[in-house]
Image (cartoon, rainbow, N blue to C red; front, side):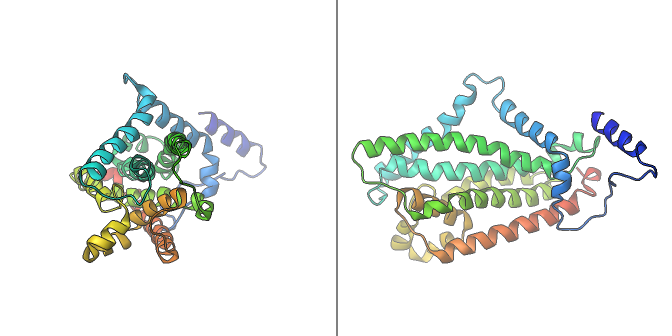
Length: 297
């Protein structure tokens, strides 16, 4: 209401009444209107706060789940893959190796799953009030950065612990690419999530398939094991990881932090290009679906 009042007053102060902006279903396929998103920045901040404060509302442990989930998963991976299956981590403490991969994987996963239900999950508000629809998936990506930051602090703590214990681990110069890797995780999940969200408006059972597929994707993305293990022991399946952009991100993330693993500039540039293309395709599909989804959701 306050926004509408300001717009009305601004119009009345002009000698010739003109529209401040026009809401129309017709727009470009690749349309990320930063000017309009900036105009609705307060709403974006509101959605981000909502996502952070309500995710664990009315839970017993609350924000402690930010810590519990990666720690318990790392312990399980260490017991199963390193202690029982004897998968080598190349001299890196297995728990730290797993925690590093899980930290990166968790951010990509929540960006993907959190944006894959945008249209169905927000049909009520989308049908009542106008705002740039892309704000909703953007808020998911931004709010999950907070969780990612908390889990990074956990990683830094154990990183320092193992250094104090005498393990020779250190980051390398690729650490300068850290912001790029974070953006690739965010936009890869965002692009895939927007595509899935568009399809779930018509095919609701796709939501269950996404949950199942994400669980499988973790195991073909080099999360619980190093890429080199597959290249050496099962070279016929190595292409599944080499052409998997998520696997390239996980391996590159571990390489720059632990200075161990496989890194190639070809893999990095391929992943970067794949991320950009997938995000643009996701934006096209999202913008096209937003015109008619309210009739099918």
